[in-house]
Image 1: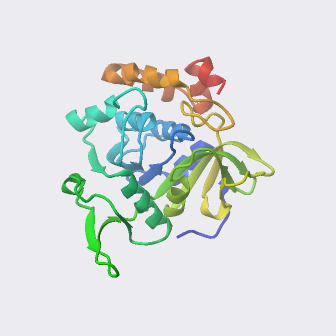
Image 2: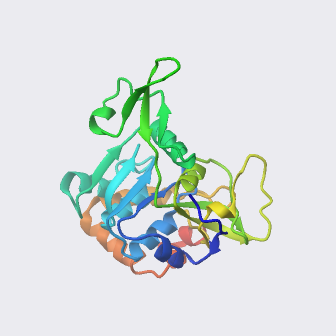
Image 3: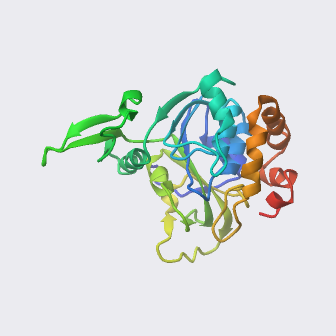
Length: 290
């Protein structure tokens, strides 16, 4: 699946320009923390369109991408502003086709995890005990059922997820492009291994990783580009670096509720800033000090 070459050390702008193209299928994964917000902002700045975006738990950055008109399809298993409520830009796209129609492919968490694992293993589909008795197969025609050749048990099968590009945020990378992740880990490893290309934004690039026990280390040969972006997970947190900015999640509900306030925010804070560092400074001290 991969060209045998080491990861490139690039700016985030360079990485998005090289690897994220109109019409791409892409995953921006992160779970609770290490959400690749900076990368999502750069995609909006560069005006990408007609993207299929994948994530188990889309939250604010996906709301922003959808509202900015970047997305034509969402593959997901839960969506919301965690601890606050709905994603208003997602709802507006689904209910009113604004700013453009949005196709949905809904899954269960276990189904998406199996699909990512299948993609990472270069298998055509994943298998799980799930979906039996659920209404989801009525709405997602890609969920199938098969019979186990050994036990005769009826099992669900889901097609492998294989993004054109996966983007994640992590704590560290070394100068060879090896990446270290620790804390709460979701499907980032599988999402990177399943993708044709991958971009990893990190808090810092160091000479030596010094990885703790049970941490995830992605070797440089499975990573296409590493970009140092301090605070790049804001408003989510990065274990060992900064806390979750709960106030921003609460404020997003009001910002995103109406089209006009959302557009004004995008124009000022994303399109009106040159990079994520300038964005963090522009939205106030809490972000700037992340």
